[in-house]
Length: 471
Image (cartoon, rainbow, N blue to C red; front, side, top):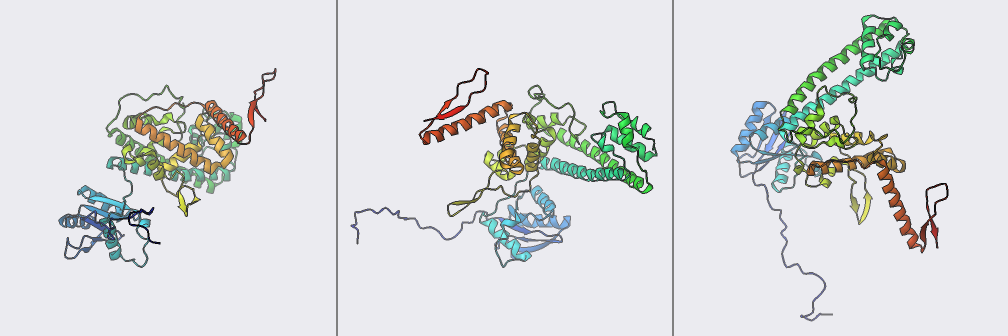
């Protein structure tokens, strides 16, 4: 049936013709395929007669690469994040004034039948020309320096912990149960006793007399635990492992001095003292804490006291800031921030159905710091501690840790952007709020069934009143 010419249909008419060609956004873009021995660089074909060139990996070769890119009029460069080979290339090109985008290799290697170094650099250059590549997050250079120190410190602590385990193994092989009478064998008492054993002392009473007065175990208990079988081979292993442990402790101390100098070089955002009266702080510093006042430095360079949030101490905040930087504008919203951390729920939707809402598998040190902070709330008598324990009882520990870490990250971002303070409402406040939420849900269900919740009058013994159903 033919409709009259003056009758309108419900179907929209697209009068504008859609172009089938992509628009070139970056006309002066280049692509670099990185390697351990050589780098292949591609520039636009109109910029050079031979637009693909090979450069070596030595510093003079990288300087020649930068000169050639500038000579060709290139202003922006894209390259894949390949191991650690990209770091010197990135730093040299960035220092020469070029915009460098570090691209996730997984996002550009999804086209089959194209796997040579020449084709890779050409493919990167083509994608970057059309603006189809997004660079990975990288903080400012001063933060990168601090991040390198923090990561090295973390590596040294992990290596030192390996030698601590071997020290304890050697002690147990000699039937010396030092770990059962003191809480930490690397503490003041533990190190003093191990030094005496390495020096040749075998009398358990003499070794027990070296304990600190604050140790709860008696001298008799320590002497009984230190009566063992001192075999020569185990003593030799103990001596070597303890020597290596001391070497790592010496290097960690030297690294702490460098970190303190690096933190002191930052421009302070505030000269005020941190508000220590709002939150009760631990009298005893946590393990592996640096010898200087880290909390003061972190507060001055950030302008916010993040340690007011339960679960976040100075070491955790230092790790987070060394990964995310000091500029919150790099993350437009809190959703961008939690998505970059990999802590927010995923959205795998196809055919109008949600296939999965699991978090993305992201390797992120800041996210791990938030997870460790969430796990530390297990015994916390705070609102966040109550939140974690309730989720753990319902969902299990792994999901509860991720959900609590997500909540901590949102609080962190809110303080970061607003420069405000955090005040813990308390565990009782959270429990009352949760009970009220459950009660409201019960009222809605009762109303849908044509029923009504009526509170039971309290008994003479002041028992808490609870609602009951009435028709």
